[in-house]
Image 1 (cartoon, rainbow, N blue to C red):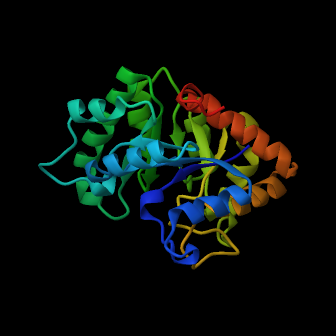
Image 2: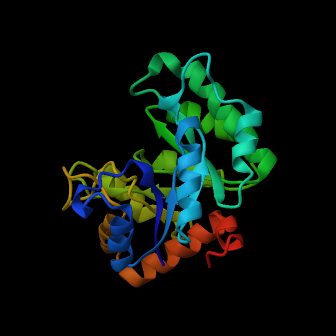
Length: 263
């Protein structure tokens, strides 16, 4: 089953589909995409992503605050997050994590928010979706300290194999985006070959990071097919085998999808 495990449906550039999200999702379904996980990034978009998950039976969502959406003095509160997570279509927490590339001076704020999301994961049992960029040491440290009883995922993975191996040891999954198709992504392709078949997910992160041959254009959920075909080639397995494996992994990581009626 081909699944876009991480996309931002409320942020898509829909020009290629006449401004219609219905048409964009139909185009993805026509390429075999069976499910979509629409990701929360802020308090402001928690309502919209839940509304999309309520509108489309093959769309599910997460709720959280992205590290680059944090504002000093307006950090997310645990009560708010737990309240937003108490919804049958919210199957995960995040995205959350650390991003020192753009905001190295906000490390303390980001770590406090990340720790709050991890606390919510422990309370609710919902998996956490982790964003990490130029912060691998602190990300892994906080995940180790949290010692979550349930798995999570490092989404849009761009780090090296030792980082992936450390995350896998903690029980986390690795999700690959269109970046794996980029010419300068040799280290990431090494990771893509080595991740165990039962810990791998696929995503677009649409509208960002369109894969080759669409690079330079707004990304769309239909392009997860290109990611899947590329990863299947470099792992030397059939496309059908890969999407069967990653589909099973998605349902194992996000069991509430099945509970919400998404077999």
